[in-house]
Length: 254
Ligand code: ADP
Ligand code: MG
Image 1: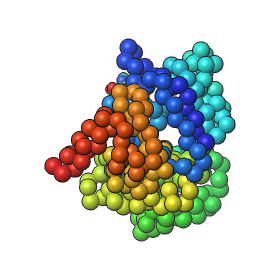
Image 2: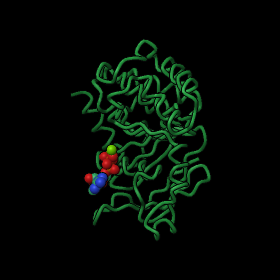
Image 3: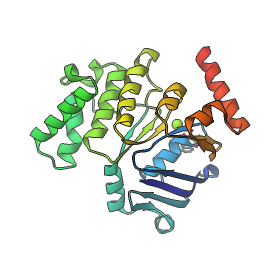
Image 4: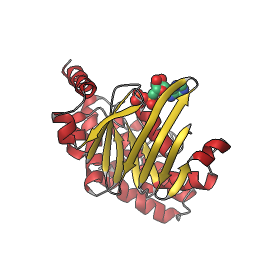
């Protein structure tokens, strides 16, 4: 479904991704963990073309988004970019909802304006998604009338309304008050159990252990270790992984 091969990325002189290989199969849930600054965000942004790469290749559902040719040309193919963006829904730390639109309108916007779905069908779909996100009562609320957890669930519904083949989550709960994290993780868990292909960057290790088919550990721009959650969390091979997991646990206890 998603294939990154030999991906290198620099910002000026700083190399932030160093020969990264990542393959995600259809229906697989891959969780990416690692210290701040290790390149997690940059990696998932390369997958949907929010970042160009300096070497390597990105292929999504058979669409070559970035490769030697796009690198030489200095830009991606517009059609490929558009198609990949339609296939990959993305949810960020910041919810980025349209402030002047209600929850329902935020969710309807993409299908109606981009996908050419009729207004009534877009509304039907949006209502169904609101229900799935346990937000039926909030359909006509504006973002500022919603809690962070509710806003993030609207953002997830908005991404799902485009009927993506896979979802990318970049620290979707990191900006939330602790008591609101659970409700967002719950809808992510539901999506995973339905077989959605997901790439999830998170610091929520208990959640990661529950949903991940595979955990990827990044450090200083490289994947240093990957494997099933049982192995990564209980018997990691690398000292760097152990140190990172210890640091996360200590921060939690503080
Ligand atoms: P993570 O998500 O794991 O915290 P990032 O991918 O955000 O890591 O960042 C990896 C490195 O790239 C960091 O050193 C960060 O400062 C740097 N970086 C990220 N985005 C940019 C940018 N737009 N310009 C320059 N440096 C950047
Ligand atoms: Mg990040």
